[in-house]
Image (cartoon, rainbow, N blue to C red; front, side, top):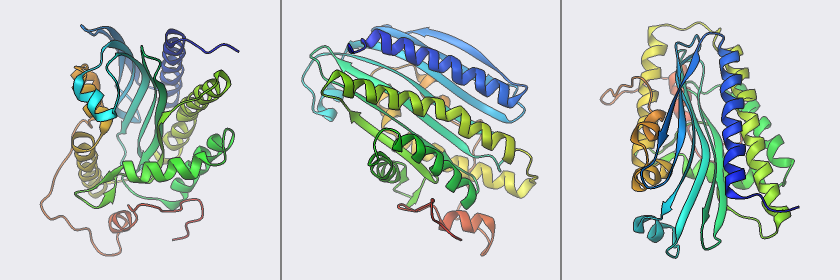
Length: 303
């Protein structure tokens, strides 16, 4: 088995974008994606697809990119790399629903290669509910673990911890959501190992519309009122804080002169910040804050 080229990997990811967009349009039942194809002056380009007029999804983006060119000095220093041109391709997704009972979700699968032979895969999938519901968190982690276990029994515990540490809003001392998995710089020494990691990446991509389709169908039917919408906007504010202050992907995109509109598609349509907001003791909002912690074992958690 010969190792796939960077161009072949880019085409596979491009097809994954198509699959995910088609699945989301079907699950929503009303909204459609609007495509914005773009070119990068330094090399490459992409297709940013924005979801509009949805019945369940208020704002969503599914972006594909394949970019290349000289690696910025800032990136070389940060990653400890020798000077060489780079190629990066991947699919990145963030969905913000109308209903505060439906969670925000994020997924990213990507491949990075340099002309000197250095290469690796990265990515992950994580769930950010406005309201923490243990049964939902358990379902999500069960499905993610199933995919991980198909490839390596050590993947789930290792990558879950990585996600807990990565998706942590340090200045708030809380996790962004109930986590998931996160991995980076995963590289195979042999062609077989390389293919296995690529297959793992694609399995995460296929999992995405399955798990989110489940939440779209189930949670969008749960009633809510003004209190829940106000809380949703506060939690969206936390999402903004993480993405702009801590997210490495956002920083990489901006540092490599990426397309700003595509990079910031992860922002919600609106968000709020309320000074010294404290939820009522014993409320669902208070329960949520109490459980935005690292190292939660959602597979066995009993409230």
